[in-house]
Amino acid sequence: MKISMSSSSLLKKITKLKKTKLRENIKSLNIMNINNRIELESCIDKLASIFKNIWSNYTKTKRVTKYLKKW
Image 1 (cartoon, rainbow, N blue to C red):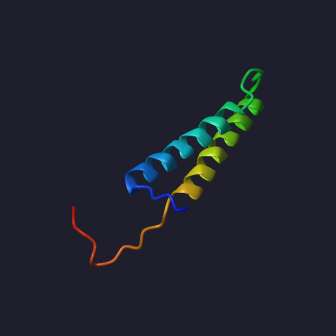
Image 2: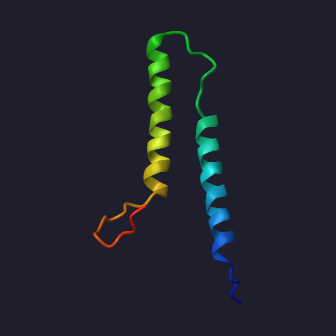
């Protein structure tokens, strides 16, 4: 049995998945006991890593050509 899904509903599901993964990763950060600059920088590095991973997993590289629309 094959279930068809419209492109808009598929896009909504993918967007929801991205948001859920981002929330889970941010919630996993331990920010309760930041007592010095080193611990703060470590937390910031982990947060940057989370955003970098989400960005690289869910974005596509566009190839710029002379046939693209001019906005």
